[in-house]
Length: 358
Image (cartoon, rainbow, N blue to C red; front, side, top):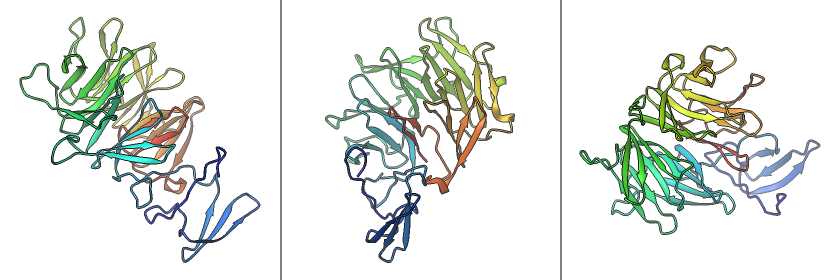
């Protein structure tokens, strides 16, 4: 029983080496370090300590709750504290951590479901609808109350339709506008007309650094950071003006993630290295050449409330403290589901819990 008075159940999962060895437990012994030794029936001895495993996993398994796919592409938390998990081939998994129930939203061959089971981006509007960007079948808007789904696809020649079918970035800004980043341009969805406004240039005619949008983030100053395959553009929403930041200071031009930490610093992860934005010089400091930090593909950068950055790559999870340059690497021995993580699949929940998908 936990501190809230609820029972936590533990079951054997053959796909997870960090679960109990067998469901039939014959004896339990607590040692002097408060470690729990469990003797199982033909499952050997299992050991548990609340400080032994740093990470818990939610995976596809025969034990409930279970995801319906092994590959997680994106994680978002809604206003009620529940999590929406976009997968590679299982659509969207809706996870209620209080009831420990998972509901699945998938494509339906007979119609009425999602346009695809490959989900790349998730966002919520002010009415509680869930916007779901797919790999190559456009945008879906899901009404969780009714289960109804509306699909939007790119139609060549439609000037107020969706710009492209690969929707990898979604953002609801401080005004409630829904920005839709595709690999063929940036759109704003208009719920009143159920149409899209294409955003290519600002009030002065300056264009975004590229039409292939990879990431969208709004910072505490209400600026919208637009990641592309050719660097970063920043939109001042008050003035309606764009600024393209010099690519020469970036470690790589293809942007995977943009994050603001609790000191209001902007971090940009690319396909080859981490970068810190300098507000004074309006350039980036490239961390790729520093021996104290990892190199290569930066898939997600998540800031925690106490000043750390949690950085996922293709082969590790790293806790980096910029102020002290402390760096700690985590791997499967700490309870990770894998050392491989996916782009966009990182989240800091409102209660301080950190989630990473791979």
